[in-house]
Amino acid sequence: MAKSQVLGNAPRTSTVAETAKTRSASKPNVWRDYLTMTKPKVVAMLLLTALVGMCLAVPGIPPAKAVILGLIGIGFQSAAAAVFNHVLDRRFDTQMARTYNRPLAKGRIETWKAVVFASTLMVMGFIILLELNALTAWLTMASLVGYAVVYTVWLKHATPQNIVIGGIAGAAPPLLGWTAVTGQLDPHALLLVMLVFTWTPPHFWALAIHRRDDYAKAGIPMLPVTHGIEFTKTMVLLYTVMLFIVGLLPWLTGMSGGVYLVGSSLLNLGFIGYALKLKFADSKGHAWATFKYSIWHLLALFVVLLGDHWIRSLMF
Image (tube, rainbow, N blue to C red; front, side, top):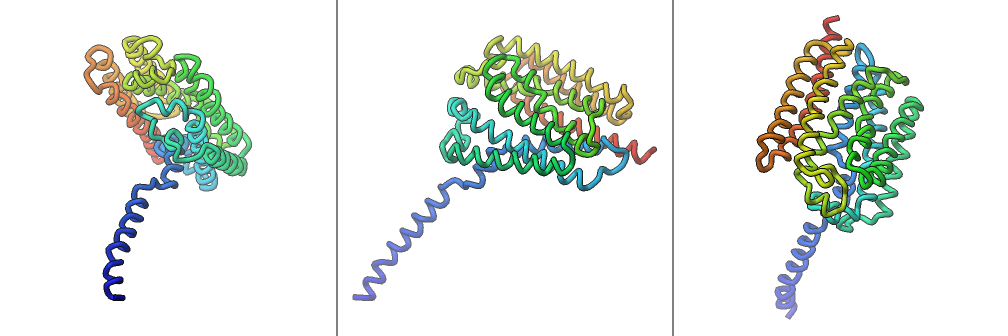
């Protein structure tokens, strides 16, 4: 009898184990949801621009303390802004194909937990940056408020120029990196801000063209929704031309040399090429291709800035 009972129970035990394993596999990883809310790819790009700002602020290698604490503090504050963005946009995220599966939109993370998480990152980042200097700490906090509150809560839903006006918050990291090292503002740091600020509209408008129906469904007045796709294509082209002109300023002011001039010109001409095709010879998926190019464009542009700086440092 005992033997038969054991044999009879074996499949049941196996079934229970398999069921538990299936449930465990299907249950989302909580840590992954929290990481997703911080928008790690966006934060990584912001940190690259901040690092370049740090390196360009001094002739040689920037102080290790400023680099480490600066990147951690700016990273925490940027991640906090991203989480606050998830919190404040959760209702709209449920209506858009690009965002409907976000942790808060799906209810996998409770709103209050996300707020606590974001607040913790914000406070930690501020304290870390305060160890360097008050200017960087407060400028970074202002950028967080600009993105998470002014842009997300007000500008995004108030005007089709939301990206243009709100772009200053996303353009701040190079300046923050510079002040983390020097503790003071500098015109050259503002040139870096101008580069990112001018890059932002064509970058986001290319995405907005691709996702135009999503934004219309959610009632968000992005430029393709309010003024039409053709008008937006024209604005993308005009801003890429403007970016080419602004891209010459670091060379014209003596901040960067010939390596940057050649590299940035090629990258900016490439962006103009994508914009020209988008305007005059558009094809299915080209708006998305333009958006993807813009990401690599900014990364490469700042790598060229850094490479030019190191080459000039070695030569002189």
